[in-house]
Length: 484
Ligand SMILES: Cc1cc2nc3c(=O)[nH]c(=O)nc-3n(C[C@H](O)[C@H](O)[C@H](O)COP(=O)(O)OP(=O)(O)OC[C@H]3O[C@@H](n4cnc5c(N)ncnc54)[C@H](O)[C@@H]3O)c2cc1C
Image 1 (cartoon, helix red, strand yellow):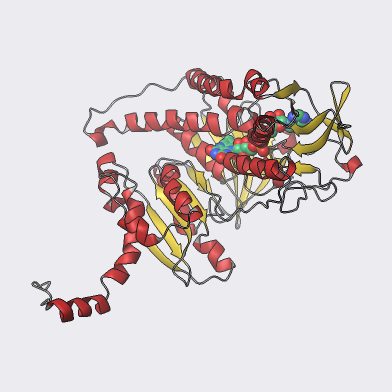
Image 2 (image 1 turned 180 degrees about the vertical axis):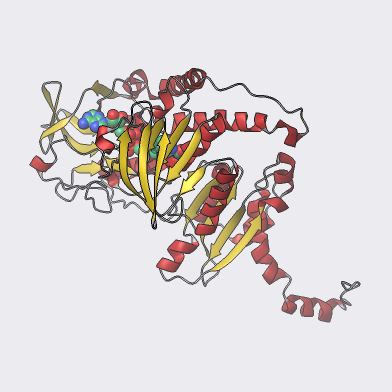
């Protein structure tokens, strides 16, 4: 008989926690899942991926409508957006997905769901709604929140974060976005397309700083052409509440500017939700980025307490949280030592065009001192892109010295979907020759994957050595036409 109430307890009912709870319960572990909000799903469902992608789609449709003439249609005069209708659509999409993340579903799987704020009382027990529950293993999957910054006046000014932005009762006339990371640029473009006047401010000299500069710059140019204004390399000196408006004072080089807008969106990165869990008292170490974990995602203080999701401080994505949940299950339930390996974790920024990546880009390869060759293919040479009227962007394929793919970045329409072929190829060790020789349906955006692999293979196939061999064996006589 175990001396604990549960085999495994999970704190946090978001992407990471739900993966662990569902998996553990299905494998027969007595599982407790604790969530402090009154519904499961976490940030991704309520304040992140789902509402943002729903909003982006709505903004995209409006963008297409406002450019109807480009598609050979009569130009239309669009009335202003009623944001309550947009929010209604967001809520309905969330409600449809919520059914998969319901208490009933988890109960049917065998997990007990409890709502309330958990706090460790000792290394095996938590206090929840006045009661103590103990478990042999614990998983901290409490996610992250919008990070703040020590900017004078920021804490005294009403600002928006990802928790409020999808549930506004009207569209802001103007908005200053603090931060040009994925959340800042996705929301900046979407709100601009809905009709908000947008300024995006960032201290870095480039948007989307983890991406290669050429790719990030194309995204920025597209957004600028749509009317978004960027202030890069800018320090934020002060944020002020002027009543009807907010003011953000910035300095770029020698120039000081006072930007004013109806709303300010704070998108300055994420901070792990680890305060208030009583971790200090049980010796679990953490900082603003996340928990201190070993490669099996166990806390350094207690090998039976794990972390999964944004609290790991690794890759702040839902699919990474799911992957980490799987690592925890293998270690805690199967007792098999399995390490987290982030080499092939893909990610995508859902601007238009989208920017998706897997593995190394030029920036990270250079930083790691890896010599690489670069192969590219443009969307403007893809027939389907032309038909769709979406020809901005390209694919970059990086090969190491042994001509093995080490990374792919796709900037273009449906890049997030297109990267999946590379997810399978890299994880499955598929050879470039196989990808280049495989038949893709025509006309599809996906042909760009085959084409970039083909660009590399062509240098082997159509080499002088092969041509010389064919000429020798089959008496081929060479060119029939010379370019004028
Ligand atoms: C605007 C935005 C857009 C995004 N878009 C994407 C995207 O397109 N694709 C993508 O992959 N990722 C996206 N993300 C990131 C994604 O939302 C996160 O990576 C993901 O939600 C992390 O999952 P998690 O389980 O770590 O945390 P969460 O999903 O946030 O779950 C944590 C849960 O823990 C609960 N909790 C916290 N403290 C306690 C406590 N003491 N007791 C009990 N419960 C507690 C919280 O209420 C929450 O429900 C986006 C994020 C934002 C902000």
